[in-house]
Length: 491
Ligand code: BG6
Image 1 (cartoon, helix red, strand yellow):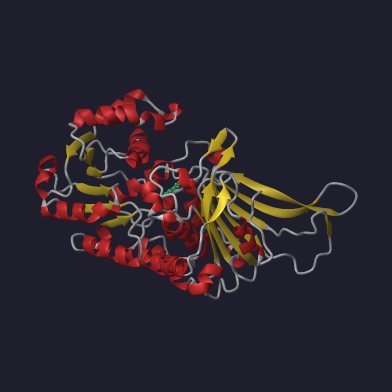
Image 2 (spheres, helix red, strand yellow):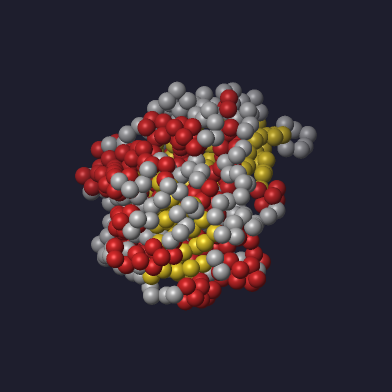
């Protein structure tokens, strides 16, 4: 499979707007450092931080020196390589909304019009248009330029369209890379490998064999210092519109004819368009909203969402969502897809559970009455693994069946450092491979499904039900799934 090629990179300038921000320090700079250590960055590959803070390049390097190390495991950190990496790093202080202030950037890029140029926008979406206009008016967009945007891309379909329109006024669609970092996770790509690299699963991958699919992205952290942003966003926009739907799409898509970017994305969008709309009362009945209350983890108590910084006392913003979705297609008719995500849940767990149908007629005695069917459990976090739950005969003189797991733990198999999702994605942008990025129509289709759900919540003033931090969310989420005679996989 050639999702990512090993061909060497061309010389590049990676211009990191929001270079002093949290994401840069925690993920983007460490990702580039790791790729530097793997000798994948060409000698003439520069990283140019851009921000409002008045650093010079040395000042920026010092700041990175002090702040980035704690985000790299000690065993993976090599002082010599880090210092060599820092030599690639430069900085330009720019007030992005003042076209006159782009001068330092113009100067540092002068004479490098033939090199790959990546504008990476790790900034609030409200700055996207100012930056794309700014680099356009400064004459910085070349043939080999690309722009990369972090989610959220808008707040609804309309605002996403407005952002996309302003992007497409200065960049061609093939120059635009919309990041969903879940697509950079190893196991997400392994899902493609599992489904389309093995003939075994294809005959089973349909409603005749699968009873339901559950996708959970549970986080143990709360909204941390992001209360102001989060309160305006909520879990539906923050996690469902992008990460959860992307996982659903990869599970449900038809085999693409090739691994070419558009062949893959053409199949993905068909799933988004086939999602049955959830509108009005239907949306309310098939969804649960929750908000965490104070609770405790092993190491002590944690405050509730409403006690968080910058969160209004009467906020009704959801920190948890559960949904029952259906896909109208021959393959999936009648198979419910249960999606759930939440902050401050029992543990950080991301997993996809495929529940297969039970045997039509059981001839065996089992301790559990064969109440749980065969399952394929694909785990993305905390560990990356694939497990298959099957029934076997327990050793002994009677025929008693018992469920056991066939276990594939990727740590054991590959025994090497797991790449940060961004490592792959950043290299793909520099290489010019958009397979793992969202096309404009995909983003629009995802919002088109999400918007009516949010509108229904507003129309019916659907409250966010409280759940105690450290649990699996409000009990209403159990009621939602038990209507189908099922329960969430929480083993
Ligand atoms: C981000 C969300 O996109 O994903 C955050 O904005 C969330 O709220 C994060 O915490 C989760 O990512 P991961 O990779 O830690 O599961």
